[in-house]
Length: 112
Image 1: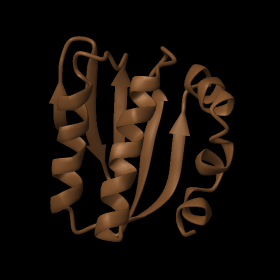
Image 2 (image 1 turned 45 degrees about the vertical axis):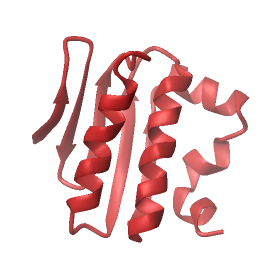
Image 3 (image 1 turned 90 degrees about the vertical axis):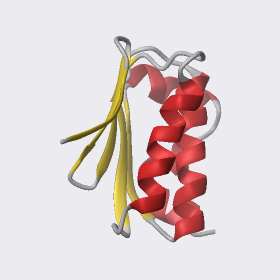
């Protein structure tokens, strides 16, 4: 496990080929949190990754914004996203935003 970002309320780690967010993504930390993942994505040699938000217990559009920033970089770099994992609260929020297909089948949805 490699720590990319660490604050008392939230961390971003890399575990094998997965970017893992743990804790509550607050608006005041969103830019730095997103930047930590972007930096890693721009330098990784991996071509297939997963994004894991399953340990984010507070539903927040900020967490989804971080996800979109990481997906944008993945698309630019040709990195395929094999899976996106959300906690139940984030999953409900994503469903309200009609992002179910993206979460369930990121490779198919992003290939369009």
